[in-house]
Length: 366
Ligand SMILES: [Zn+2]
Ligand SMILES: [Zn+2]
Image (cartoon, rainbow, N blue to C red; front, side, top):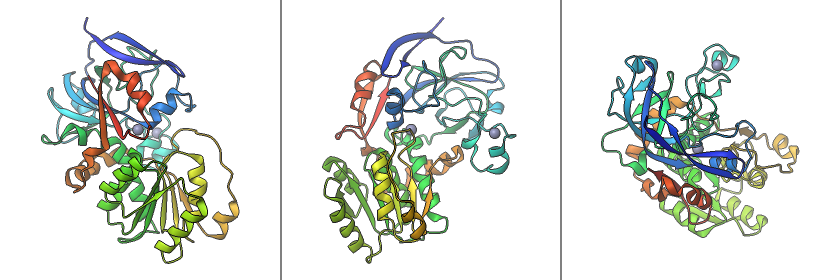
């Protein structure tokens, strides 16, 4: 029986290279051969044990594209396929979470976001190894696709370095959606805290959807330089004293502060700063802390007195279709966000590099 090379996260801080058997593909399922798998900041946090909802051991990797190499006769009708019936040979992106159960509170009351369902049949990159054959994550030669998976056929000419950004760009698009709800209009000002890959996806989505002034802050000049190439107007060195930075931001925004501030650094202290930077009745979008990175002290007074709107940021898989269009049409050199590619064998080295100042999106190719 054929095997798939994989990297198993055995316990927090421990990786193991294993070869797993590829099972026979069931009638309603499919087998994806990996083309590329993007490393997410979340993967690193999960690896370090910052995510309470995942059970070790498991194969991580939830940002992946590949080719359908095998499928059961009823797979196409049992998957949610964008771009026509599924066929062997299709090059596709896969959303990490499957369709919702259709019956829980969230499916009934928030049907526009199946990502909130508590009973999804699978979430790729976060499912334990001891479930059947274990091939449920992107750091592997193959991923086994179950019924009710969202599959998006890729445009034939979309380069790997764009297609691999679909999943993180969905978070950017979700933030842009939040911007449009009751506080935003074309031309409004936005500040993004954090110029890592997620910050870059925010920049792309905001530029694409008509933001005005965009201010980006980060601790590393290398990352700010990337933000400049992706369309930021003003770059702020986050190492400068807060009072100085706040003064500069106010001067840039008619003395008020930005209409919208997006926390994309994934650091609790950035959230606290965001509370002080957002203008009265403005909106704060918390997009960076998808894992539990700790606490920060805040003054609830600021939220109440300033009449702030604070929202989270979890995309619906349905947004992938729009994100593919955005990636096709953005005038920005967005592929440059992918700074490194490593072969699967060197995954530990790639994970180590993730989040360092020279690293944008790091991609694993078999
Ligand atoms: Zn991710
Ligand atoms: Zn549900």
